[in-house]
Image (cartoon, rainbow, N blue to C red):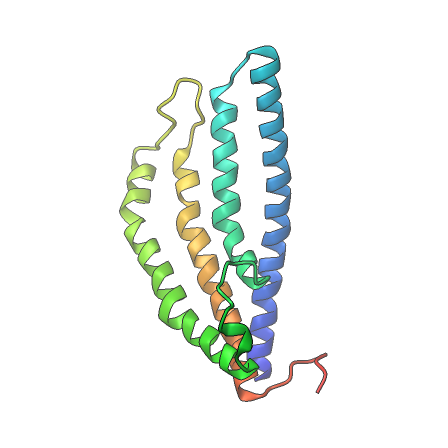
Length: 175
């Protein structure tokens, strides 16, 4: 069980680091949107590259930040019944959910986007808009990366739920 606890700690630490990075990317995105909005509406000067940078940053934040959001319990869930269940029953539902829903869905997304992403790399895809950003293939590569990170964090969450199911107390937890 100590090995599982160590793996969970390492995965959660990785997600925390990614979460901090995503926080900074979000700050950058807000600044870019603010600058672009001021330039467009106050000075009537639009910039295609800035507009594309906004949605590129948003895409990275959304895709790469999903694993951190899972770790922090920030995903939407309907708790009408769930909150009235015992801790062990909730742990079973979450544990099984990782293997029945989360991981298979992530694998399907990764596999189904493979050709789309490889094609983008083959042609070194760029923005079709004049003045747009180059290297769109790098952005598209965030899709499998984000879903892979979600699988890894899902395994960490399943490990934590397994410890609850078996009654294992992690270091620093009260008895």
